Length: 454
Ligand code: UD1
Ligand code: CA
Image (cartoon, rainbow, N blue to C red; front, side, top):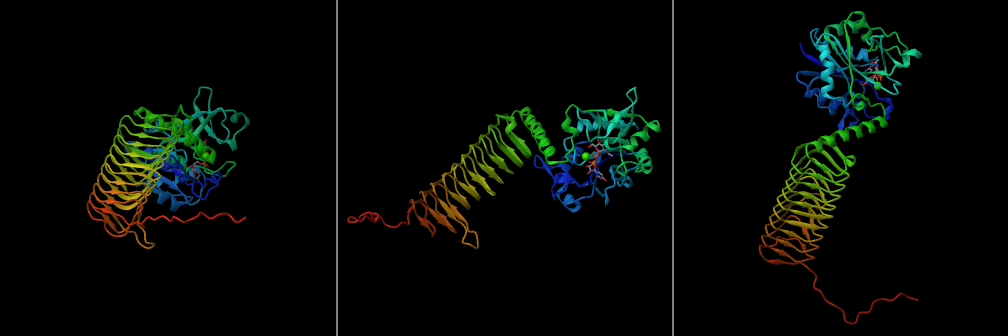
């Protein structure tokens, strides 16, 4: 006896007007179907089965799901879709039916619906809609008992007046589901096997149909087109922002914050300014300030770090007390020790920069190891690429690199070495000495500035 969550995800999603299968479109950077699977994962002892069809291989490749994948080769209706799962459903199981394109359903709601299925009755999630157009209507008798569900296309004018809609989400005892689905007939305008017909069958068999509802319409909203996708994206972002604020994060404007992934670790007293996007897996320490318009992806930000506006950080580790930006770009493989300063228009890639070193202005530092207390002057470039291969630059502790220096890798700058401004360094520079490579300066005394010919 177990709980089988059957997730319908075989539909094409024509109205998305996209080559991508509908359930792979993303909300908050996570595919629609993955949202549903993640919610099922939170429920104790529920086993998920995904009914897939359109874009099959791509769906299986993209989605993280260890459970059963069941193919529905031809899409002949929601009832037909659930029929495909029957070989995996025991008569004493409880089946929870979910939709791969209804991503924001919450675990608490599912538990309420599931409860009825466990009681050997039917649980049905409904919603009262001002404009129920397009949805199946939940028809009740005058005592308020559910009688049947009628699809929009099959409904009488009177039935169309009904504002109580079927979300599609329901729980059904396994044995009964076997029986009812076997009896389904495609006797309707669309010639499809309607899952919703089992509601009337339940009533005929004397099985009670219990309804549950939700406060937030977003929970039961399906994605059929890009408008609904955008609408649910906003609802989801609001939910994320509220959760973060409940955890103590200061969001200067919760409407202008986007999470496209998850914050796996979060310290206290984090303050996030407007238009910040966090992507993938991000870890944020305590007392971190993130300035306006920053994008941080798959990175770790240490305690007391300040990230100034317009900085872009990807696959990087930023140590405690660093100051980054404004307009800094930390590319993959950037690892910063404590108290490092990376200033404006600095790009780093595949580098280790140790404690208290500074790269403050207009530099490119790639494939390098930089020691502690190093000062890299404005306009310094590590020439790491010879057109075919990448080479490493090492700058040891306490070195001072004058402005506008080119370090032609492979090259090592010694401990406490000083490189004079404007140098092109092609050979290793020894410890503690001044190294310079620079054309000698001279002045022409008889020189005249050219004049424009008249
Ligand atoms: C369905 C319900 C309707 C309900 C609405 C809620 C039926 C007959 N109708 O209508 O009462 O108000 O959902 O959104 O169930 N799918 C498959 N295989 C199929 C057909 C559909 O996997 O053969 C999947 C789709 O990918 C989708 C879901 O089932 O995720 C719903 O199918 P859809 O065709 O959108 O049903 P609706 O007509 O919207
Ligand atoms: Ca639909």
